[in-house]
Image (cartoon, rainbow over all chains, first blue to last red; front, side, top):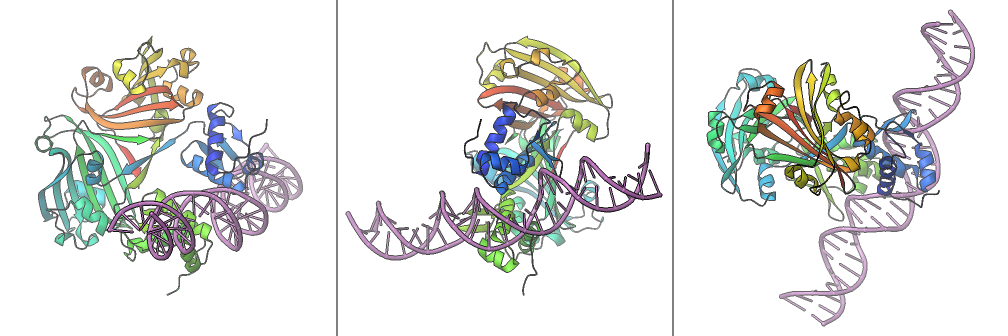
Length: 233
Length: 233
DNA sequence: AATTTGAATATGTCTGCACATATTTGTCAA
DNA sequence: TTGACAAATATGTGCAGACATATTCAAATT
């Protein structure tokens, strides 16, 4: 059986996936080398390389130099999660966005925040709490700490009109960050603000970002229990 | 100022990131074309292309043919989430893995499951409930529905020893899937099994997978409230 | 003024080649 | 048997050149 001319990396990917799904190459199989595949598909090795590299990125294949490429035995599939600005998330659901600033205070970090950001007790920070609304209903409660020296201009930002989320994204770059997803029971304050019964389950997203070694911001975003984050894989 | 010879795509990425972080290229900036960058960096266009393409994949840049490449104004950053097998997740935390099968029953799908998988009421499914333990303590409650025609051999699988999770990953390929993350309050049964108070917040992951148009499985995984999912960006 | 058409252009991708690098495997010596 | 070292090899990456394709912009037409 000879394979028809396959000359795009997507076509190569599709063919590889087909062979895996048909169990022609079951998990653990060592598949032919790039050179050989390029020959059988009638395309350049670079094309095969890109196809295989991307499949390896998603966790479907495992590649090692000299050892070759094999179908992942215990695939650690990688899902790509979009992290949009809250306003965009709300608008993309077809709802009208609302925002209200609840608190804005310059103060020293709480111990929990200090530990997360690895900052001294006397750090100069801005604590901002705000509520994001979708169609006038509470959608997300945002509790944010901003490292003032790392976010020049934040003290002048019009946080009563624009969420810190949006201001930071446009004004303060970051090099890397970490996100934690978890669940928690609503406390009295959260319950009231999110208009949900006290004790009801909230979906929690905590994000910390740095610019180099300098922490920029830590934010805890609480969503009502009916929220759900979705991704494809 | 002339840039030193930059001749690896990672070096190009680093240089681009540096210029963005230094606000030399603030959000919204239209950056030079690939040809020009290749010239200034003293490398091939293909190298610049790969660097820019990957940065666009993570949401830092936005590219459009003919229009050029610009620094994302409202970056929808993309975080890559690892989806490991539960056993591996537990073991990678340094805990010993335990597993117990709670229920295994061949029956027609519940309405909720039927709606999710778009299956007829008389579909032939296997319902499996099991508990994953970390160091003898409940870690995850797995409630799974398997579409028997799509998972040949599942009826013979030794689900008392091996979790359906692991068996499926090795035996039944899938082409795509969807994951939902949310939070929910523990019901009486969940609370008892997870050894957590009734009503406490649980972290919920629901995953559906297909092979082509045929649904393969739907799982609802409940984690105790102290669980947290982490990703870097 | 509005619409269609067409040229210009930046990215998208493929090719064929070369060399780099990690890792395995085999060989030889202690 | 064990350990050190060298060759073999599959992937990783770079380069120059070419053509494909989407999109913009401007000119020509209605």
